Length: 293
Image 1 (cartoon, rainbow, N blue to C red):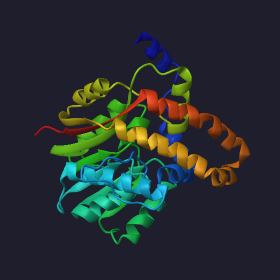
Image 2: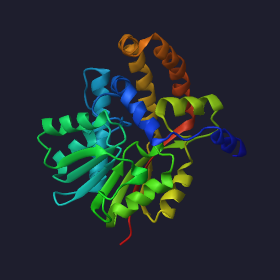
Image 3: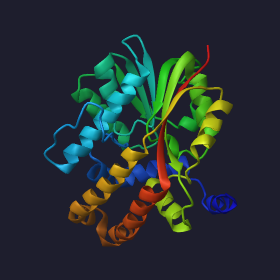
């Protein structure tokens, strides 16, 4: 444990500006290696059987949409509800939730390039009247997000980026109405990762070193949330890691043409280390929380 703490102490947590700049620069890369439906881990083992897909990218999109649908069902929102999407990515989950439930959604992102992509997705779906997006930092939500103004919130794969998780949780607690639910996903630690693993994770995912699942639980309790349930989805993360590696190699020519030989050479060196880290040392947990009445 002491060794882990020492390793983590050598890694400065990324600032919101770093995270936003990373998505601005590498948005195309994420689309190529994760699919373009959303930017989060997919659900690869649905309880009702596998769906068909004609390409690996289609398969990735199906997995992400399936995972999004799982989160939509977990929150159980309706037309009178308002969701805060913390770290809305390119808007896929927000638009999907609004279309499925009739709820209103406000999405925030720290990536300037993502806002117009989100807005275009909402317009294409005919949902601009119920889904809006803006720049915003979950660790420092402004007055435009009033106290007790949302019925629910989710943070799908955005919470791992945050350098001040307690502040983000306090802000989520503040803007939720009593009884409101927060769904968040978090990368968690398994075993003893090497320094190069943590360095590549920080570089590729723009995230601080992962915490243990119980540490995350402690942070949510300190912020005032009750735990509804916690689920281990590490199996889906493992498949996503393998798919990312496959799609990276499959789209290598496009990546090299877009980012140039020098940047691509750095990615070439990082991807095998990231694959090993995801396989051997990274977990993935889903937390459904509730603000007490």
